[in-house]
Amino acid sequence: MALFNKYEWFSNIKGDTLSGIVVALALIPEAIAFSIIAGVDPKVGLYASFCIAVIIAFTGGRPGMISAATGAMALLMVTLVREHGLEYLLAATLLTGVLQIAAGYLKLAELMRFVSRSVVTGFVNALAILIFMAQLPELTDVTWHVYAMTAAGLGIIYLFPYLPVIGKSLPSPLVCIVVLTIVYLVSGIDIRTVGDMGELPDTLPVFLWPDVPLNLDTLAIIFPYAVMMAVVGLLESMMTATIVDDLTDTPSDKNRECKGQGTANIGAGLLGGMAGCAMIGQSVINIKSGGRTRLSTLIAGVVLLIMVVFLSDWVSQIPMAALVAVMIMVSIGTFSWASIRDLKKHPMSTNIVMLATVAVTVGTHNLALGVFVGVLLAALFFANKVGNIMAVSSAKTHEGAREYRVIGQVFFASSQRFIAAFDIKESLDHVVIDLSRAHFWDITAVQALDRVVIKFRREGARVELKGLSEASATVVDRYAVHDDPEAVEKLMGDH
Image (tube, rainbow, N blue to C red; front, side, top):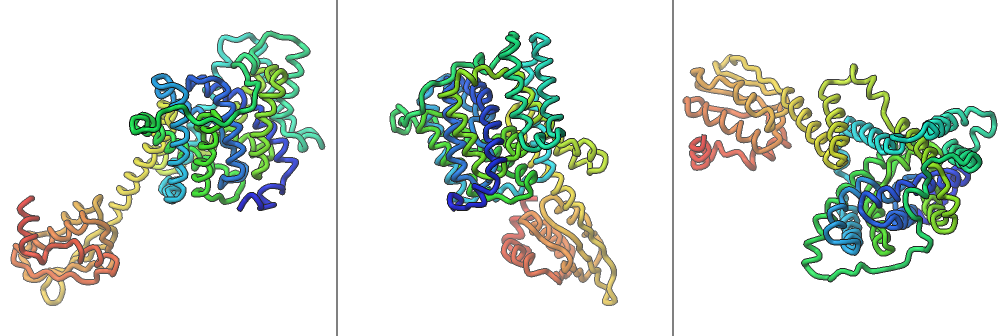
C-alpha cells in the first residue's frame, strides 16, 4: 500500500511542503467560488476540498496530483441544490463516490486508451482557456491598482526563480502571495481580498449523515446527478493524471485513482462537503512549485483547513490579485503552445479533433461533452483512414478463372468499396477470391463478402475463397450465410 511506501511520501519533503502551502492558498478562493456556483455555503466547498485532498493523498493512484471541489462538478449540482437543497446534494455526493469505486473495480479507466493524444491536447488547451477566463471577473471594472498588483505578481512568479541561491529554494507563487499581501497591508489600497469572496468557516467539519428519506424516490432524484458527477469527475481526474504523468515522466494507477476518488467523495459527503475531482490547475501549480509525492497533497489539504479555520483573519487579507496572478501563470503553463506550432505539421484530421475539443469544452463549459466530441471525431477519422487502406486487384489465371486479391482491412467503413471492386457481370465459370492479405473485422464485412459470393453464384460462377486467416475465419465461419440457402434468400430478399 502507498501508505507505507517511503518513496511516495518522503522522497521530496521540502518541495512537497512548500508546494502544498502554495496549493492550499490557491484552493481557498476557488473552493469559495465553486460553492457560490453550486449555490451552497462557502464552507461546503472548503470542507470538501480539505477532505478530498487528505483522503486522496492516501487512496489515490497518482502521487502529487491535487483533488478538491471543482468548477466542472459544481456546474452539475446547480439544479439539484436549487430544487431539492443541500441534503440531497450530500446524498448525491455519497452515491457519486460509490459509482466511482465501482468504476475502479470494473477497470473502466482502461477506456482512457481510446482517448487520442489530440483529444488530450485539446482538453488541456480548453482547460487553460477556462482557467484564464475564470480570472476575468477579477480584472474587469477594477482600479489600476489591481492591474498593477497582478502585473507585479506575474513579474515575481517569472523572475524570482532567476535570483541566485534563494530563487531555486522557494516556490515563486508562494513568494508572490506573501509579498503582495504585505504590500496590500502596508499600503492600505482598496482592492478585493479573499475575505470579500465569502465568510470563512470558524469550526472544524463534523460527521453527518444526509437528512433525506432512504427510499426509491430519493434514489430517482439523486441518481442522474450522481452518474453525471461520477463520469465528469473520473474523466477530469483521468485526464489530469495523464497530464501529470507527462509533466513528471512517471506512471500512475488509473483504476486505483478511480477508487480513490470515490472514497474521497464519500468522505466529503459525510463531512458536509460537495463532490469533487482532480484539479488540473492546482495539480500544475503543485508540480511547478516542486511537489511530487503524496505528502504535497496531504499538506495542501491540512494547511487549507488550518488556514480557513484558525488563520482566517490573515488569509482573508490576501489580495485576489495575487491569486489571479498565480492562476494566470497556471493557464499559461497549462496551455500546449507547441500545439499551435504543430498545426502546420500535423494532419488536418488531428487538428480538427484538437480544435473541436477546445471549442466544445470552452463553449459549453462541459469537459465531458468536449472529450466525447473529440473521441467521436477521432474515431470517425480513424475509421475513414483505415477504411481507405484496402485494395482489390484481379487477374486471369492460366486455367481461365478470374482471381481477385484483397489487401487491407474490411469492416463497416470499407465494406461498400469492397463490394464495388468486383465485376459481377463478367461472364465467368470460376472465381477465386484470395483473402490471405485481408482481415475481416465485423458483421458488416462478412455480409459484404456474402453478397459478393452470392451474386457471383447467381451469375453461374463457381466461387472459391482461399487464404482466410485464422482470425478472419473465426468471424466469417460464425456469421457468413453464403452456404445456407434459406439465409441467402432472406439476405438477398431484403436488398
